[in-house]
Every structure is written in C-alpha cells, then in structure tokens.
Length: 537
Image (cartoon, rainbow, N blue to C red):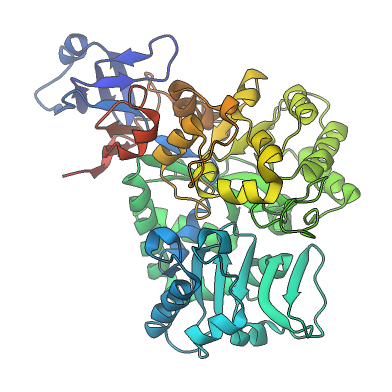
C-alpha cells in the first residue's frame, strides 16, 4: 500500500461499518478500511504511515450547488460582506473605492455579499452612492442573493439602460421618482448584462485574466476549498469560457478538485446538437445537468410565491422567468433528450409550476435524477408530490444563519417557520443534498452542519426548530447523499474499499461536538484521489 492512516476515529458513513481505526490507500483508491492491527500487517517498508493521533477522518465534503468560478472571480474583487468589515452603507462604498484604486480606469469592478438588511443602517445603495466610489469605472455591486445588483451611472451608460429602456421579461429596472433608473437591477435585468449579453460583464472580466491568469484563479479557488475539507463541487452556471478555464487548469496539472459542470439551458443547444451527454469529461471535470432558472430569491422578494410577501408592503409575489407552457417545454425537451435537469425554484408558486411540468413529463420514475435547487418554500402537498416523483433536492442549511432574518422579514414570523423543511423531506424519503450556493453564503460545510442542527438566525432567532437534523444526518448530506446527485455513489461519498480516496481529517468529531461549536472544528488535512492537497501546520 502507498499510505496508511492509523490511530484515527474514522467515520466511514457506511451503515454496515460506521467506524474504523485505520484506512489504507493504493493508486488513489481506498484499499482497505478496518482495525489498526489488521491494516498494519499489510504495510511494506515503502508505505507512508500517517498517525491521525485520535483525530476524526470522514469522506471529503461535496458541495452540490456552488458557483465555483464566479466565486473565484469575485474573491479578487471587493468583499462587501459584514464579515469583511462592511457594517454600514458607507463601508460598502469605501470597499468599492479601494477596489477602484487598484483597477485600471474603464475596467469593470464588482462588489459582492451586499444586502441592505445585513447592514446596521439597512441602507439601500443606489447609483448615486456607487458614483461616489468611482466615476471612472463601471461598477456592479452584486446582491448577496446573486439575483440582483446595484450599478453606477457609468455602468448604466455602458449597458445602454436609460429612462426609456423597458423592463426585460422576468426582470425589473428600478427607478427613482422621476422615472430614471436608480441603478438597482433585479433578475433578468441583472442576469442578462452579467452573463447573457455578448460580451457580458462576466466574460469581459474573465478575458482580462488571460489563459494563465484564469488557470491560477481556478487553482487558487480549489486550494481555498481544500482548506475547508471540500473535495468537489457542482457548479450550476457554466458557460463555454468557464468550462474552458476548468479544462485548461486540469491540463496544466493545477486542478486537484472534482467539478460537475451544469450548463444553463440557454447555452445548451450546441451540447445538444453535438450529442454530448451527462458525465462526458474526466474524473476532474465532467458535464453535469442542464440548469434552468424558474424564479428568483426569497430574501430579495423575487422568488415567485402564491401569497404576497409580508414586508415591505407592496413587495408583490416575485418574478417568474417562464410561464407554465414555457417551463413545460424546457423540462420536456431536456428530459426527452436524456439530460439530467436541475431547476432553480424557490417560491411555492414557482414550485407548483415546476411540479406540474415534471408530472406531465416523467412517466418512469426519475432515472435521470432530476433535481430542484433550493425548494425553500415547498408546501406540505408539494413535498408529497416531490416524494412521489422521486425528485432530488439540493438545498442550503447555511442560508438560515446568513439570510434567515431576511426570510423572516419577507415572510413574517409565522410563514417563515415553514421554510426549508429538511427533516420532513428526509422523513418522506426524499433524496436531499446540502450545499452552500457560494458566493451567496460561505462555502464552509461546518457552518452548514451547525445550521442544519441549530436552525437559528444571525440574530439568534429560532427558524423552524421542528425541522432540525441530527449530526449524522447532516454529515451524510455533505458526503454519502451528495454523491448521488452526480451518479457517483459507487465512486465516492463514503469510505469503502475501491472508492476514491477523497478524505478530510478534523481535529474533533462533528458527531460528538456541541452543535453550536461545530464551526470551531479545524480541518487539519484534505486528501483528494489519495494525494494530500492540504495539511495544516
């Protein structure tokens, strides 16, 4: 054997043998799991022996919904989160101003992690505020939900948005009292310029890096995730340029990270025409599902709900990107072509439309493992229909501590208690995977574990306490259960002979640590394909 890990508290996530004391690795795979004495007899003089000293080893974390490349890009931009020191609106302006000072005039700059309700002064920033940050750079300040933004006057000019510009289908250009755009863009009014225009803001910023710069950006991001114990992610928003960046990083030998790439339905026609199917690629970069956006986000009131948001008055019932006929068409097209489908649907009105689309299309179970992303506002009856269809759900426990107070404000103290019903989903036999939706939330899985167990907001308010999970359930949703979402349950997700040696070592056992202290656990080692990619010193 190449490597022997011994003297550990090994959580295999295999029901038949949940714990072990040692694990052996050969050729990037798990050779054997069992008792220390048994495995030590298999060691040779060439075997590398690593003493875990009682630390806990478990399968490497898999994030089933993580905007990996967008996060890689944004981390080089202005971090406008409260955690980065932006507690007031003026702090956000200053962070953007600092980014402008190190950016060539005329180049786009971005801020990320902003939301008025996260600020102490709850200030709604507009183009006038961003103009003070810089009049020489087009600025895009991305809302924490990544379903809207604020832009400055120069950005509005570059995007060709004027007083006469109509709202695009599925989007809103917000305006001041005189009818002029105030810089706030929601849904397609934001998504279009950021991603879909030719050239888009995203493609311009990616192009500025050049090929080698993009390779280093992807590599840095993978290393950042290694430090969190994450060994792979499903990127739900991959265009041709992003896929090329991933492939370039792999070919350069700088990507020891497993990426399952979702192609947006609006970009999928060339893939369809070429006959490229799910799973095409390598062990590091694979084509995954086709992604469809049906509605928006809850904290910014664009998720499509059946009953109007409670606050602020007049907030309405959200935004839909498709009518019933449109979502029926998209689901049927890709299902018939044999593609896995992943649909962003948050509000119960959008979820109702989506379930109708799946019900009319899916006649033989769910062999393609179609999935709903977020599904935060499922009603009781809708949950039963999800179970009957066998749909998968990729959701985010860490939204509860980051966005939970915003959800409670939007839905009110009563309705909000029925959001993100993780325990009910599991009791109904629904396949659930936990994720971060990074950069919406921190990618740290340990925060997600805590929030799945505690369900408390940043202001320490209870958020649907009957839906709390236990520690073993939560860990399984980042490991064993997550592997099903990419058809890889036979290759990873548990520690079993023959599976990939994708491992994380923690200084404490998350199953025994008080729930509120789980984020204090340290990742001391991450192993991907048998190679140590992170080792705390």
